[in-house]
Length: 354
Image (cartoon, rainbow, N blue to C red; front, side, top):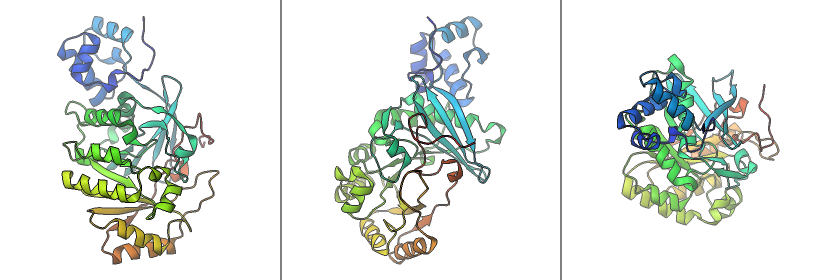
């Protein structure tokens, strides 16, 4: 019986040996399929011309190579950022983003359809949680975004798990997707080009500290005291700042890797010099840099981006404390593709812009 057009358990989520076992073929056939899917970003088995026709027909009839169906594509005329809506086999939808700056390409991947954390300033959190994504559904976002570059692809892209969802609440699938993207017969992404961003899932951070690689860690903090952070990031009620700080110290003891602290600046909420001093206190003992992000507008939320003068005052406090801080120049906010703006438009409140 023919397979559905896409499947969360698609071949894009399998290593070469797993593909060979799935299709009941020799190791060579598994490697061929893997290379077509991952290195060449070809998802039509009939187009994989180095395999016998009989094998292609049998595999195509019985196995779903792909997990995603590309839908609405939006491009920013200002920055060239691209946001793609993908439909999953069960009708759920996710969004992922391609950002380009010169020769530097960054792919922002989603790990869940929706998000259960409910951060009050984030569009994804307002849309609610639908389900975890499979390794195939996560990995294939990167494959399709890379394939869309065509001849413009000159460098290996950077991968950031900063799209929809909390990566550490879908730990196994995220880790398998990282290993698939690092595979030498596929995209062959270096570990240092991959960043996993968490809202402070302490259990996930401690597990991540045990992984023997140099994948980067980013933490979305957004507040320097428990009262405010619990209001902005409800996960803080489970993992308060003291516990999070201790976990980050343990992570650095094991991995000896610098951490990035993400902080969305919201007018009159967390952009005061008092919050900057609280952030400085949290940074004590950590090898970390701060990435400041202007809040990006989300329809229906009563927040405002921090004004330039206040941002500068915030940065000045950090620099006086010897903390390296940068202010991110957002790309893609005109198509709702910037930090905190992704949402499942089938189940969210917004419609794609024309």
